[in-house]
Image 1 (cartoon, rainbow, N blue to C red):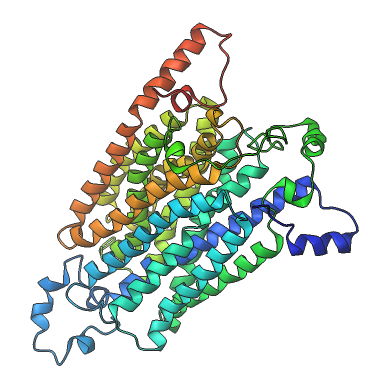
Image 2 (cartoon, rainbow, N blue to C red):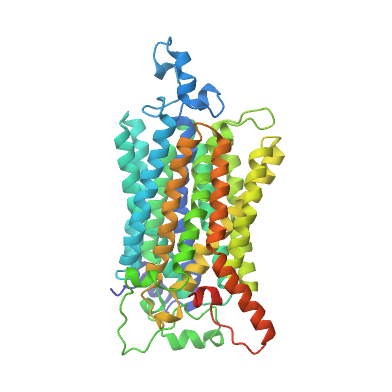
Length: 510
């Protein structure tokens, strides 16, 4: 389906009296897609901040023990709701922590399933319309979750339903933004450029944490409603101004390639085939068969399991752990948890730059995942010594956990979505991106769910699960790492060896 020129750009060109330039469109695409996905993550982060308010254990000042271990001491109280002030039924019951984990699972499960369909759809419809519908729908149902406070709703299935529908709308976001950026930017320094651009994930998490924490004093409903309104407004802006590709605004390829002497950055990721060849969208199974897609998708499963466990449970963990002998409030824990995302920004940029320099995506990703194992161990053991230790270890852990996650979901997805076997087909990027991130999102659903159950027994067990996941993630790339190292050694022995666009490990996997 051919996309139409956005109304906002048409009005801008009429007022200006001349067409918008290619460079201006590139800047516009980067800004709009950045804000778009940052707003998606801002709405996701809200749940982790409000979790401690919905769950009564925070108000009781207890550690991380499950509610059924201490609620039995409150049997003589007039009723649990009065005793567990600040909690919200049904989450202030004995199994409140488990219910919160099930809501996380519902959201991420639907998100993961919807991702596969959204990617398939994204290569066949107008990406601007798809992204707009996803953002406005996300805003509506995020706000509806918070409205449960105003309407005094205490049905678990209401909150479950709102999160599931929100997850379905959110699934359209990532394949859309990656495909749009892929239409506008070339292969030069792709890892670094997309690593910087991928900071939208951490920026969204940080802004979502700060907004949700600030709104708690007005009632936890506002922590959902305000981010919901914000993403809907950004969605309208996307509808009015986002150009999905150079052809949409009437820029001919030969013109913008001549501009800046056909630089790699200006050249689109996907070199167009001759106009007389009609492109056919790549099928789901065909995309899975692209060399490198399966191992990176499975690796991302475990990377996102670790990353999203922190995303949903870190504020809760901080508020239930004595740091330097003192417990932090819900708002303070939410603000402190943003340092994990600050580390994630640095990690994403660093991983992209290193992978560009080494021309080795798998080696870079595996190195980060293996390094995350001791970081997780030290954060669990020494993170409660003092606030300074907690901040330092949290930052390092965020950098090592989010580094490979950012690299795989951006540069690696773009690499594989423009694989040589596609012969320049431009209708595969959204599908490949959806497969990789969709598989990862299944892990993102599993992690928080398991944490809901395991944390009721021991947080040390949770960290053991996270370290094991990081180990498996690195091992899944071992075959590709060996291929990359062998290719590097071969290239040193034969300097005239022609380098391919992608590392050998992702291009020619047996």
